[in-house]
Image (cartoon, rainbow, N blue to C red; front, side):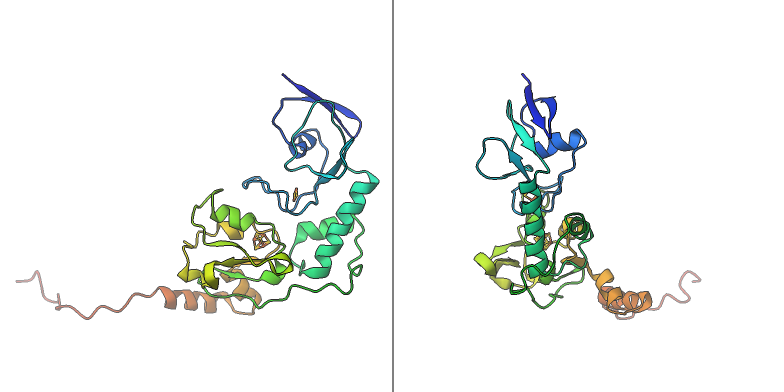
Length: 242
Ligand code: SF4
Ligand code: FES
C-alpha cells in the first residue's frame, strides 16, 4: 500500500509510516529543525518545523506528524513563515544564542527582529562547572531535551539529568540538584555531542575560551590523573649479579 500526498504542490507517493519531515527532505524540501535530531526520539518541543496541512486547524510539527493519503501540505506558507519567525524571536529574547550557529542562520533567513519582545525575562544562570569533562551553561539552553534523551533511553540509559521545575522555571537539572559526580552520569559526553546551542561544552574548550593555554590545561589534567606515589620498594640495584 502506498500513500499519495502533495507537498508545496508536488505530488509524492510514499510508503506509510514516514513523517512529513522525512518525506519533505527526501524530496528536496528543507524544513528547519531545532529539537529534532536523527539520533533521538522526536518530541515536537520547539515547533520550528511546523507546516500547514489543509483541513487542520493549527500548524502541524513535521517532525512527528505522519504522512496520510491525500494530505496537502505547505512548508513555506505565510502562516508558517510567521510562526517560525515568532518562535525565533521569542528564543532570541530569552536566551543566549551566541553559540548556536544553525539557529543564527535561521534568524537571518527569516529576518528575525531580536528586539521584538524587549520586556521578555532572560534565562540567566551561572555556569555549572562541577566535573572534569564538561560545563553546563543553562543561559544557552532552549530545552530541546536532546541531552536528556541520549542520557536515557535513546543511548546511554544512565538517567542522570531530566527536566525540573515548571512553566517558565523549567530547566534541565540533576535529581535533587546534585553535582554531576554525585549522579549516575558516566561522563560519556553524548549529551555534549547533541546539544545544539553550546549550553553543554567540553571542559577543555571552555578552559581555552577562559584564556588558559593548552600547557596549563595539560598540567591541570595530569595533576588530576596522577596516582598516589607508591612508597619506595626494596632496591633492585645489584640484583641479578649475585
Ligand atoms: S542543554 Fe543543550 S541539549 Fe540539553 S536541553 Fe538544553 S539546549 Fe538541549
Ligand atoms: S524540530 Fe519539530 S518540533 Fe522541534
